[in-house]
Amino acid sequence: MKSSEQGAVKSGRPETIKAVPVRHPGRWAGAVVIVVLAAMLLHALIFNPAFQWDVVRDTLTNEQIIHGIWVTLELTALSMLMGVVGGVLLAIMRLSPNPLLSGTAWFYIWIFRGTPVLVQLVFWNFLGALWPNLSIGIPFGPEFWSESTNTLIPTFTAALLGLGLNEAAYMAEIVRGGIQSVDEGQTEAAHALGMSRAATLRRIVLPQAMRVIIPPTGNETISMLKTTSLVQVISLAELFTAGHDIYSRTFQTIPVLVAVSIYYLLMTSILTVGQYYIERHYARGANRTLPPTPIQRVRLLFGGRPTPKAKNDVVPGLEGGGHA
Amino acid sequence: MTDLSKTPADAPGSGPMVKSEGVRKSYGLVEVLKGIDLEVKQSEVFCLVGPSGSGKSTFLRCINHLEKINGGRLWVDGEMVGYRQRGDKLYELKDREVALKRRDIGMVFQRFNLFPHMTAVENVMEAPVQVKRESRAEARERSMALLERVGLSDKSGNYPSQLSGGQQQRVAIARALAMKPKLMLFDEPTSALDPELVGEVLDVMRGLAEEGMTMIVVTHEMGFAREVGDALVFMDGGVVVESGNPREVLSNPQHERTRAFLSKVL
Image (cartoon, rainbow over all chains, first blue to last red):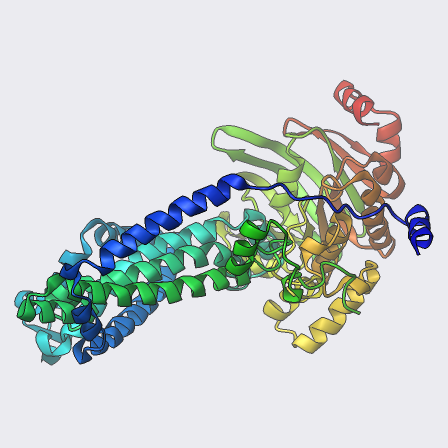
């Protein structure tokens, strides 16, 4: 048996190295310190009566809070949708050779990025105080249709306008950065083939810009989820406002805010995981090997051994020849 | 009113493929082309050589209007590039009209410029489908035939990042040919390639020349110019220094500047 193995080594390729991996005693010592500190913190949190954990637990299942979660999610999704669509349009305008379009986009971004979103929320909510009626008609001429501003823009719409229009200004800069990250040779090649400006943007530039646009957009979504709490100033009953209503009645401010924060943390955690996998998806084809998933990373840290590669981590077609 | 941008003698298909009269181009205060006069005949392989910064690539890019000329006149197949002349006035062409003319002019770049998010065959199909509105099935079939012609039918499903430089440049040539151009522009097509991969690209270009394609080639491959070229122009400092039959110019240069350049590259 042994002789045949040696024979195989001699005739075939050299033996695969089986070495003892480097030990990391410092890591283990550090881990112990951190575990002790974490235990102390947990102890301080749990056994401090001021936190009133029973109130926290009751607040978590409060109907008003649950309703608030749905409003928060709805507001986040719609504001981000408005932000992304508006941002793409603004970015394209900003990069247009037409000075009127690029100037308009520049002005929009200047206004909406340069003033606090809190002010913008209040502004949209009190639009009725500035213009009591909105109407459609000939400019400076007769009106055909008119409606009260407060009917047209209820609180939810005001919140959506405030958050969405503000977000569009930020997204515009993100999308512009993405478009500008695409090599100019791509545009030239498309133009040389006779493709129009619009087709070049849609077919060639934007798909490549996506890799740069997606990660900060994920960031913006997570940020938006928490920014929605600002609509408390116009009394829209989302998650934070619901909490605010409860502790103004009960004066149990800290326990209620802890409960509200637990929900925010839960929602941002879900979004973070989603963002991670979307980024990983868009890295396909660009990176030769994909970064390890968090689970693989934890194993790597303590095991010191690389985990076997999952089958779907291999970029298709890179290993072997092409398709027939 | 007659359209003077079409000179009567140069109806499409009869006169020279490219005619340049005193073409000038500047970037700000720097004048890159200082009056280029030349003629490229139909089915000719026309080589542009010269040191870097001599303006040869810029001139090539003027031909399909990737660069706008500041002076002189430039015609492709009897039609003025980038402008329309009525009376003694020039009118700029709209983006759409420029795009329409570019369909007939294929271009191959030094850095390949393949679309990285598309496979080889998708790169070749893209313009026929998007610009000429060919059906996807028809375009795919034609594209596969073109890939076959450049020797890459087995790589049709690969992304550019999975191909060697030589393979990428051959896909780029197939992509340009998919629009059935009457003129092909090559901007240093082998300069970014490993030496051992240069041959496969030059082979494809040689094949094209044999089929009678009109080609303008900016190159440092003097062997290719000598063997395949019908005409050669040596440029330096934005002007044409010397021109003629490639074999004569390369073996017996008349100007001191040409001699100095060739002694370094040959």
